Length: 240
Length: 284
Image (cartoon, rainbow over all chains, first blue to last red; front, side, top):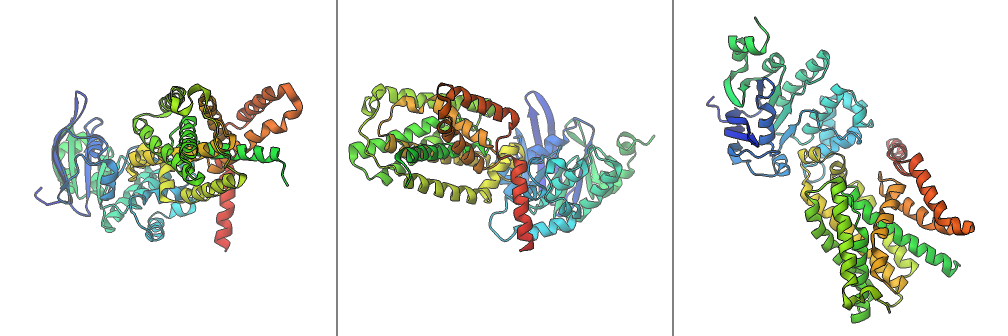
């Protein structure tokens, strides 16, 4: 893809000790678009997100975001550039209330005056959280926790939001709810890099997609094209 | 008027509250310290040295003691960046012992004989004044950006970082501020007892400080205030049992921790109180 993007990952290599989890991945996320990253367990999808958000350091390659290389920056500096990562397992602050979690989401935005309007915006996107705002995050259902995790990330006004397996462990109805929300985020000017096991749902809501296999990109293109591609249908969509 | 004896109990209780707050502050960011006695010693010796040897005015000496506590707190914070939980407890315990042995072997500070001739300066008003400032400070912190960073760090460090909390910076601030508060406590203590020796700030002191805060509950700084007040006044209330006093004291602490391991003021109790505040605010 020759589109110049908000995020351009260039020949990224990441290892855990001697295990090479990501081996030369390049990808582009255009501004305000949804890009899906699909692949089997252990393909390196989560590792790639962790490398982009600075949690682990790649040993080769570049992560260019708005022209700047993010490699080597500490996590909080990357967050301040409004690159927000919602990790698998959601990273809920279980002993805090929904409201406290949301307020912390806006932590990276310094200065006063933004808190109230951001809260209203997020409550408008996720009305269930308004009802639950005084409840402890740990007492929410799995689906509500996932919604809270995304909402909390939205409090930081992300330019790039990275979601790792948002549908994991959720009932089908809630999975649809999550995938209904994702396109709405781009309307707010947020680009989404989505890692999913549920390939069909991911490809249906994304504009572009990459298929990862043992740390390498094996296929990429428009999501609609991939959805129709026989090799994808066979390996990831369960078609005969 | 209060008797001298009562005033003395109140002063010591006040200093215990200050020390418990010095433990609570880093603890509220998830950093457990078993070395607050060490910071107290630094504040006590530094301020006493200044008033005795240099005739420095008391408030200035007190501030200097707090500064020393803060700077050393910052230094202790660095190794603490890589350590968590029990390991951090052991390192800070080691720090406290190191300070004690250091003063034991420092002739300029009287060594094992102790440091005497400290001018009487601390009054109940100094203690209450420092406490008032601390209570104001803690109420401001808990609603602030830094307070939110502390709470997030205590709950889940990875999640806190993912939200943009600079954990390195926050931990160092927590340790240094804890050191400042303990240094203040030490300065007030030295200028009330008028004699200090290294044993006054040993492991026992550090552990009692920890006990006060944990007994009161770590959900809010009010827990440290309540815990330290109750536990330092309790021995006076138990005078009537004479020889059994320490046994009864230990027994009461034990029972309390069994019945209410989360401390006197727990999250549920505080949530009930703050929910009431919120409702009142919504109405108003």
